[in-house]
Length: 73
Picture 1 (cartoon, rainbow, N blue to C red):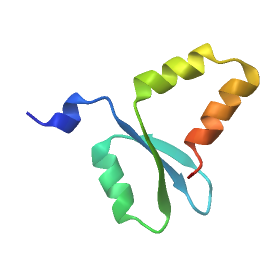
Picture 2 (cartoon, one colour):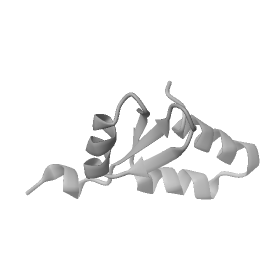
Picture 3 (cartoon, rainbow, N blue to C red):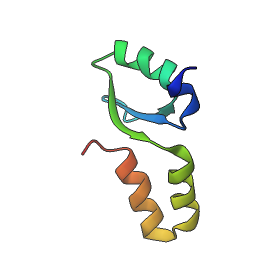
Picture 4 (spheres, helix red, strand yellow):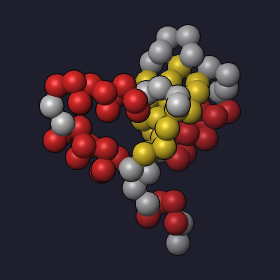
C-alpha cells in the first residue's frame, strides 16, 4: 500500500517568471521539482481542509487564505 496515495495531499507551486500558480499531485510535483529553477514549491496542503476554509471564508478573509497559499513563507 502506498501511504502517499492514501493521504489527501496537494502541492502548490508558483512559476518564478510568470507568477502562474499550480496545485498538483505528488507525481506532477516531482516533474516540477525537476524543472527548477522555474517552479518554486510554496506549500503542501490538505485540499479538503483548505477548500472548506475557502468556502466558509468571506471577502478579505478568503482573499488572504488564497494569497497565503501562493506565497512562500
